[in-house]
Length: 345
Image (tube, rainbow, N blue to C red; front, side, top):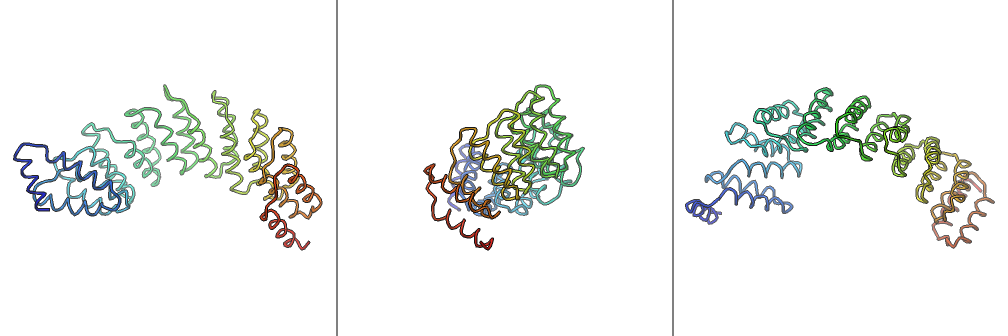
């Protein structure tokens, strides 16, 4: 290390850009996994010899935050926070650290210093602070910050904030979603509508989530199979078989035909929630659409029939499976045997 310092001193004596080269060196060092603490040790050594600046601090603070050493990152910030060389990058990298430890006041203080100097925060800094404000219930402050962000950057970032807000009360996300939609030059895209639906579902407003396709259509953005797939998956994961069927019926009204994998998802959700007859009705639609069954399609229905004790129908479907060249494997027969044993047949 002493040899390196001698070389740096020679560079300085020649009027070369020592610190800029060091910044690149540290960026390279922390970019190699597991060398963050080696970079920190090097920083302390070079600082004692006058070879250091805020850019290098910023690089290591960001690296420590990425590996979860938030306290280490904040202790480095403490060394530089009163420096006259406080820089934009340092503030941007430390705001997420303050949010992670729950010190929202310090994060806001850092943001205010940036405003005083007319610095524009990064999207990452904005996002972290919005998340932190939402977490402590400062909803109005979060929305104000979002407005500042949209004013400083572009409206396209509204969708990113929607993803952050989807973890918070439905009223907040709805308020922001409709507010963003009214801003000049901005239109919600599919990602935005999807995030809104996820939000409504996670806050137990799943019936409202089911109305998102109508909202999209009304706003000139007709839904695609993907939007219905998201709703079906959400209801399926929550064990809401009848809501899955409701969304499936709505999908048909919009003139969208599901692909095989989505038909399988609908039938599986109905079978698992003891709505076998509805699953068989969906299977009839499947055949009318001219689709070809996969082995998974047959397995879903065969399991359901065996569980209900409808053995003849199960074997009939097994025969159809062979006719369609979907050769049943050992797992098919094992699954049937298990279900029959469980039913005491």
